[in-house]
Image (cartoon, rainbow, N blue to C red; front, side):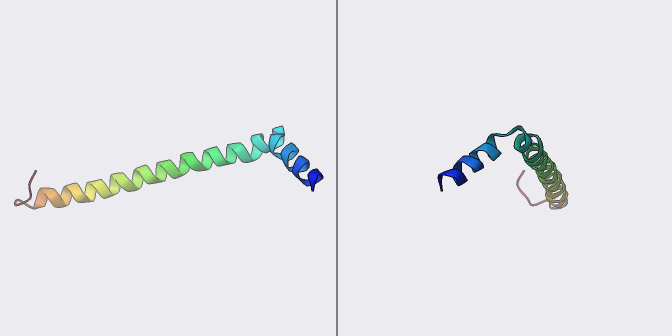
Length: 59
């Protein structure tokens, strides 16, 4: 069992892991953030348009 944990530690500390998996994770988080930003901007535009059409709404 000790060999398993040492092998796993060597894999996670290796340059291959960070060069391939680490960068992929970072890029995925960045892309997800942009999708979230565009989703929120689109939703905010719809809500702003709806508020502009309703004269009884508090602003």
